[in-house]
Image 1 (cartoon, one colour):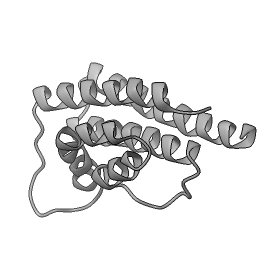
Image 2: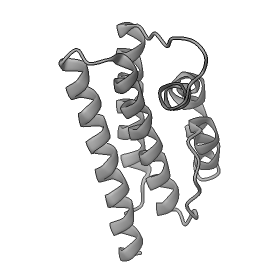
Image 3: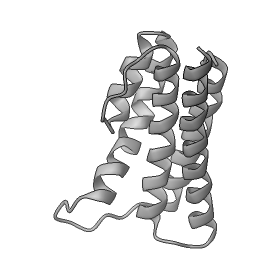
Amino acid sequence: MANNSKVVQEWFGKADQDLNQAVFLLKNDRPLDYVAYFIQQAAEKYLKGFLISNGWELEKIHNLDKLLRECSKFDKAFLAFIPSFRKITRFYFESRYPIGYAIEYTSKEIYQALEDVKNLITFVKKKTKI
């Protein structure tokens, strides 16, 4: 478990860097799609860290809905996050790939997503076995 614990801490550390980057960009009036990307990445890495702490084998997946459903196999309370995280999942794809139209996020959406991810992080830390 100690080796697994180190890996989980590394995932959480990377996620914290992503969250700090999102906050920095937001405070410095950088494009909101960049902020959105780092918000999504922080959530994804915390969820993967939780899953890894429970013996999950890492998969290349960016869909927070699917990751939350995987997490719910260990704790059904993760299902409550799904509605608010559907939008955050789109942040990854909309910021990374051409989608044929301009992406515009409101500051309100971004601040809400940031708050949602902070709440998820608090929840994950309480539930993670490391």
